[in-house]
Image 1 (cartoon, rainbow, N blue to C red):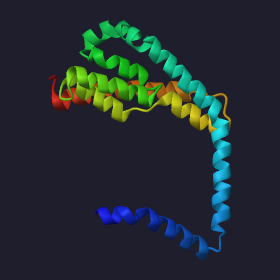
Image 2: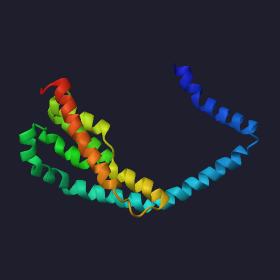
Image 3: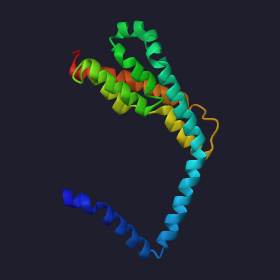
Length: 175
């Protein structure tokens, strides 16, 4: 198995060169054009990504997500949703790396086999970083008005939080 992995990259490069020569394509010119287009895309997305990263860092450093989570305490008590998972739910639509840090904290505090740890793991694995995705994809094509995309995506995230809770509850029980 190790030998296959060792030759995978050279094999793929060789296949690309072979396919390009069979199609009579100047492979190096095509590569250079693609690389130049990549740089143009990077420069057009840089301000959006920079603003998003700075905003996420500021919100996380300020403790906003930990302060906002107790507002949902009555809902958690009523439904049985684990309160320690709420900061993850608030951060996941905004930042993948930040939510991964929250997941790590949750697993360290309550354990990976706890009900909260299982719910947090399913949420981390099954939801999207909505704001990042919308900013990158819409920013790449220059769309300024996203219409109903953001509300629909956030509703989808909320639905996945609820479904993660229900699925873990139904399959693993309330540990």
